[in-house]
Length: 466
Image (tube, rainbow, N blue to C red; front, top):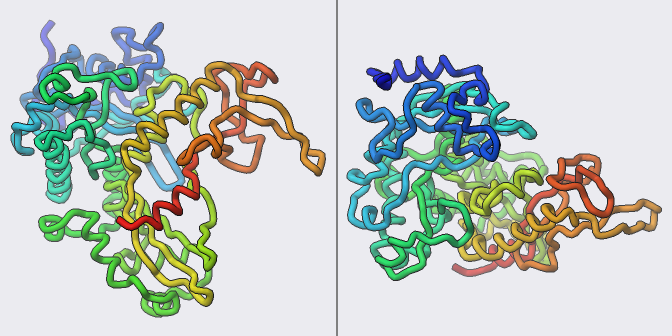
């Protein structure tokens, strides 16, 4: 039986609707989610191709619907307090190092295949198998002229590293929308062909659109265009997003809080007032981190108050993780890795001179790839080993008030100069299921934990001269 041919974008969207509301188990005509594949999220795209569009899975270099130039992608999103968010990066196609070196952006394999995307969506539900999750909606996506300018800049960053003989230093932290993520199972696996050609240890990589980019797309789509934008296309033709941001902030360095209050009509004394000063500097009417450029570009504003004695308040925390998910993941696929690899932190630093705060300096920072790949990986591996072995609780401690607390074997602050693991909140009753029962206590759940960036490291970052 021949495969169907779709003649328009509308036909593709209409056909997608026939699968919406059904679980992936119901759509799984070739039983890809049975047995060892039951937790394989990579199977979901194949299930949509086969169970909704009735196509055979293939690895052609051209787009899935070649006659329309449309590539089909299936991905999950989360509902958060800040709105809908993409759960993970969106892989596009395999990065062939030699082809990228030779190809301009407009002629690249990646752009030829992926300039028009049909996105099939499902909501990621914690505690559910992929078979239980439901295909719920989708949309057709093309890139705006602003997006294309940034994609070109990102592609050239990656391409220039290959051309300059430093392809082994490619990192997802290098770029804004378009990443070059590692692919294939196993930390440290090499692309043998590319490694021989360039005489470097090169990992297999794929081009991917960062989760933060599509989070911005998704929020604009469902917010009906109400997301604030602070940069226009003409600016992007001359400078990158980060250069535009920095250039807008620099004229305010040295301003006292009294001056900023008057300039931006901020009257209260809450901690959030510092964010409003920065919003005023950037020309944003709402929250800086909710603007289109910050969401899609993976920028995150952090206002830091340095006290007169040179100290800052606390470590930097990240969202809590699912213990069961951690043990099933490779390091590069964890939410923590992707968050750090895809985030550029804009530190706006206000120093207390003993009388009031002064806007002292700005620091646009992303974590060095080597620290993430080596030290981050160490903490992740140690955590994974603890969870898989069941050696979570190492003993108990009684406080002066008589309260007995559990001591655990999760990676501690003293063992790593950058990262550690500790509770996400103060409530010990807020727990997540464990993949293996704890050997000492037999408990099958444990207090939610998250990765933390040490405040001593954050202080080093903001004090370091670039």
